[in-house]
Amino acid sequence: MQLRNFLTAKETDDRLTEQPPIPWAKITTADPAILMVDDCKRFQEIVGFGAAFTEAAAVTFHKMSAKNRRLILKAYFDPLEGHGYSLCRTHINSCDFSLGNYAYTEVDGDVKLKHFSVDHDRRALLPMIKEAQRAATGEFKLFASPWSPPAWMKTNGQMNGGGKLKPEYRDAWARYYVRFIQEYEKEGVPIWGLTIQNEPAAVQPWDSCIWTAEEERDFVRDHLGPTLHRSGLERIKIIVWDHNRDLMVERAAVAYSDPEASKYIWGTGFHWYGPDKFDNVQIVHDAWPDKHLLFTEGCQEGGPHIGSWDLGERYARSIVNDLNRWTVGWVDWNILLDETGGPNHVNNFCSAPIIADTRNDRLIFQSSYYYIGHFSRFIRPGAARILCASTQDDLEATAFLNPDRTIAVVVLNRTDKERTFTLKRGARAAMCSMPAHSIATYIV
Image (cartoon, rainbow, N blue to C red; front, top):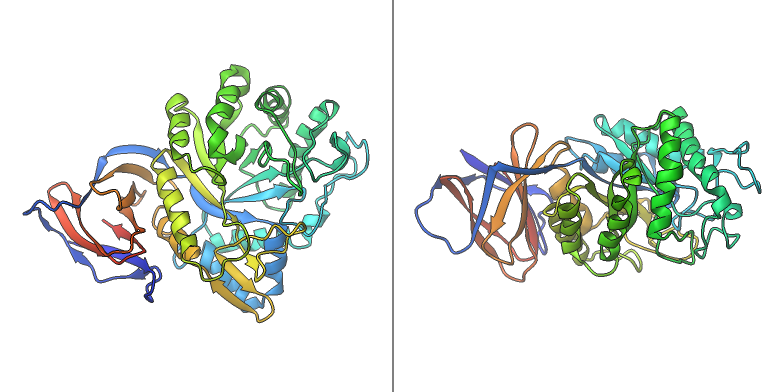
């Protein structure tokens, strides 16, 4: 038997490139660098990998030629030749990566939601999501997050700049989520889950709204949870926090300490902006092992960063560390942006794994695209994390047993040197070598 392996490496042409197979052999020497895997020890199951559909991504997508639109969809959603994305996100109302502020009803005091309409999303966002659904062919889950309620529901009278939901609109806001789900499902786009609020602790110059941990807990307990159940939508996964790792333990503690609120909550979502604090992900699992952990957003801020190799390494380091701490899914931010890192209605430009040069109808595949693919292509929904341990700090790794019984071992080398190590499974071993600044997936 031989070990299949795929490599992406800096200063080479290897991009998810299959390498010559590596033979298995009996262990004969004690190599100081060992990476061991054991599929007898199993942990969480993976829900999926994916990215976010934003209005910015959709508008950019529709500016490209039909050929390049097909290439984008294939690159992300084809389960055989692409990343096989199966878990994605979108926004309720506008976000910073929209062309401007909008809500589904902007009529003051429309608590009965008589004027509710998703017509705005039918222009670009929904058509892109539907094309992605078709390209995926298999499992496709979509969760949604609001950046802000309509301006008339808020204390500051605008969607931007923070503010809070007025208490008298909590019931209407809960029904707003339900209407969103119902309208999207009429379009043939089922919703899998909801986060209460994108980044509820951040006052931003774009669409934002502040929730304390207690307010979020009470809203789930008294409004959103019961409203979803009364509407026959108890299957919807409710995700709290949806912000950075730094405060996720504190926020989870408040949400889960109330049994009535906790019974509605599927898990905690988190982002990567700010301190890494990977240990907080583990702490949340250890304290509440019956709840799930989901990485809901991450991107490189400050422009498109075209050609940067650091992008890929930042993604891979986060994915490895989050998966090894019981995270069940990992969702990137914008699935596509233009050459400026936008469009964005407040100039908050960022990077994306695929940049679309709309001026020249050209696609730019960033290092982050290839690094994400080392996970999403080979760790499939339903895969179980298995025991995986390295004897060396500079060999960062995770391993999963797929439903088809294959084992995918992803190894990251962020150093300036080639790394040689022994991949060990039971009484067999394979001698592996990785170039500097590379990532490899080994299929057992």
